[in-house]
Image 1 (cartoon, rainbow, N blue to C red):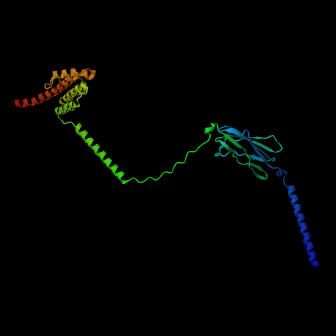
Image 2: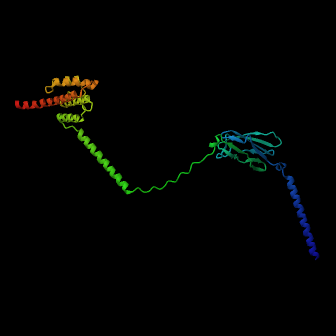
Image 3: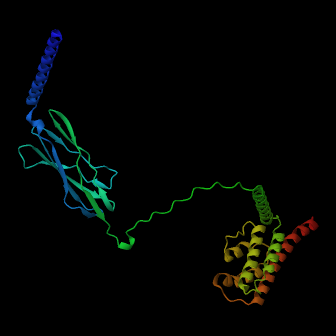
Length: 325
């Protein structure tokens, strides 16, 4: 029993000695902490006005007080996706308190959306010998009012567009009709080109072409339609084309005087009749001289008679030459 009591007393004394040593170590550690660590970092932010319109410039002032020997790093800008954005990097200056590190940063902000818009700014980083400390700022909220009238201040979004519906397959008979229409158009174009070539192709007989042109002009009945001058001019042009086809020297580029001078020595051409026809038709053709419908028909008949007479003389000369031979 005596031994047990002695052991318990020794253990009790050892515990008391360990507790006293721990208390002394804690007091020594507390006395060794620098006095600067007991000073807390103070930060605040304020705006010059809390109610603005879109595009107005607002000044946000952020002030931080930290222990001496510390370095205060302000965030360089605001969130680029927020409704309130910074116009430029902040301007940083020293505060009035010289007992601590007093730094003031001024931000120039501008909102671009209406309503209550929060200011989103990053943390302030304070660097000291003890390490880096991040300070989260409590920032004010801006109210951005609209400058529009009250009846148009609300923004109503457009309704969502419907999804593109799957198109139904085109029926086969649509393709059949399209193919049939393409074939019909192709046949029509082929017939028109063939008809135009057949109509425009010369026959090689100037007299036959002239007779066909006379008949085509007479079917127009221009004299009865109130255009007697045009009827006489077209009939005279047929005579000029006939003579240019019969004689190489008489081209369509000649004037009436040049044409008469060219065919004057041609024995087959009825010169006097041709001269009288051109002298009477040229004022109608170039000067719009008045002409009666009956006279226009007579001039047309005269043009046909000149062509037929020239053709008769031209075909009679070879017959005479054959008879003389």
